[in-house]
Image 1 (cartoon, helix red, strand yellow):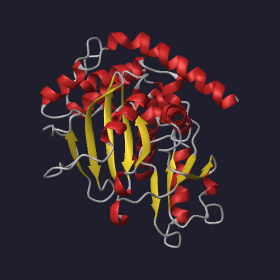
Image 2 (tube, rainbow, N blue to C red):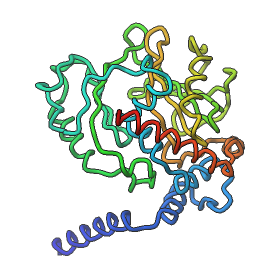
Image 3 (cartoon, helix red, strand yellow):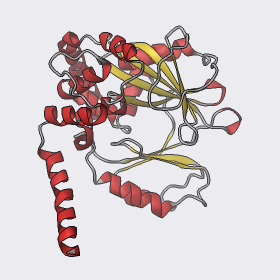
Length: 316
């Protein structure tokens, strides 16, 4: 009897993996959205932000998306658009999990990231206390996965799994950095999210581009009180707009180190895999109205142009 149950359990696991790989993208994202929210997205005439992000997952795909989703190759895109000033110094880039080793990484403090997925971030504040074997095993497991199949985010499908090791950036008084995230619509910041203590006691707050608080929320706890705008906010918004320029929608993330020194974080095309619905609902619809899907052809031409420039620069 136990053997039969074990066989049935294994069969269910195999079926789930098989279905994940062969199910058409449109059907898959619709079912996933329904599972999360209890209703299906309107993919023929999407209106809400999360619906439009599902549509973009199916229709807005380019080599530039793939480059920018790759935490290693995104550095080249940022350098070409902004210069290297905001890039966190890289300690090591590797495509071999075996390099997660104290004999290979000599730094005392660092952040190690997988380049092709979400959540693969490992902070080392003391190399002698760092779980090298555990992190190496975790990274090796992650590098075997293609994150495209989890949420049908095509930008991850052709990313070569790798490891990016960067300097550990501290905030003021050697505390945790703040994260500032610009949600950009047609290359312009539409609203701003600030995240505090991402890995320990995450709280967040939203502002409009004039730094007036916006009273909506996502899944994370909201910060009580207010935050002063960071030094250099105007330049940050210009930099975010420059990086976001070729895309209908994306989120540009920066870390704010000591004295609000900005460092590039990442570019995200579908926050929360496009499955987050901001509340109250009127905000979800209002943000959806800020994306004109009819402009996809012009943005696609711009993406192809920039991808060609990136390819020529890399070849040189």
